[in-house]
Length: 376
Ligand code: CA
Image 1 (cartoon, protein in one colour):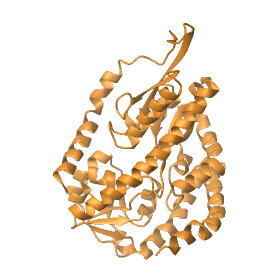
Image 2 (cartoon, rainbow, N blue to C red; image 1 turned 90 degrees about the vertical axis):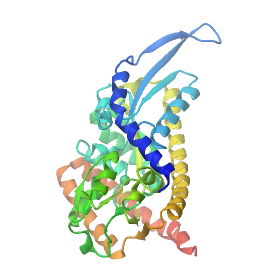
Image 3 (cartoon, rainbow, N blue to C red; image 1 turned 135 degrees about the vertical axis):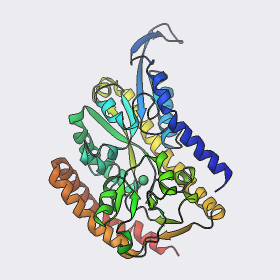
Image 4 (cartoon, rainbow, N blue to C red; image 1 turned 90 degrees about the horizontal axis):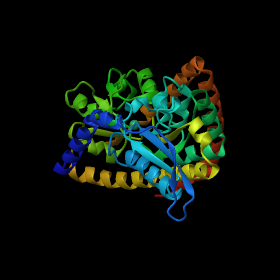
């Protein structure tokens, strides 16, 4: 681990810690307003709509927070100032995980976050982020925009006064950092791992003692041996948190998060009040931010992987044994069955997801998979 990386981790952790102070300042911000300001080109009044957007990302968090800021800037520029969006990182206006409620109750008009964070409130929302052994980013886009996923997403959020669109992706994640070798299913039993969401539930079924910790707390938990393993994102973000310093094995693939797509969540009333041209600008800017984020993640991850190999040769990069992946895949529908019994919308979205997945798999087998297998 280089000094430079250590400094980056400290900066990230410090930024996360001071988010609470930001909340005090943010409390002084004005409520969203529509005001008439004279246009510079002519003297006819121009209506300006001001929105507040909260995020679940730490201040300055690369690609995700900066991607949300990129989106807001593009909306302002494309609309020539007709829609101005002020962005607040997690904790600056509302707590990071309070952003869904903030959008529902109109405290904020928009949020940049991930639908699977609201699993306790909207279990079906998890399908619109990522599920174990589910779609990659490009497959998610196909389902959402071509297979009825977006309509189901809107239906799922409608009772909460919200409407969401895809915005930002991490690409395929890594399986995580381990301080114990995983050579068999037996090695999972009793392991203590930080892994949230449905992936965590699948791991729990396999005998793992799972915990959920915010990013800023993982390093210490690993260092002190409170946990034996953790997952976060991929090489780029993982090295910022310093994981090469505190774990020996870096496993792939990210079976639990093969292509998370995060969300632009909007207050439905605020969305409905937007003129059509501004709605189109919001959607186009979100799509642009998503493409941009995928490009950033792919580029930064490959560079960070190369740096990891060079600077931390003691870290062993390994693939999970086939036996382990097969067991986790066997347990995934068991978890989905339990979730479906508890929530009708989860069952409905799951059925649609599975149906699209089956159809797509037949095609992918002789297109993408066949192609990838052709490369030596
Ligand atoms: Ca993750």
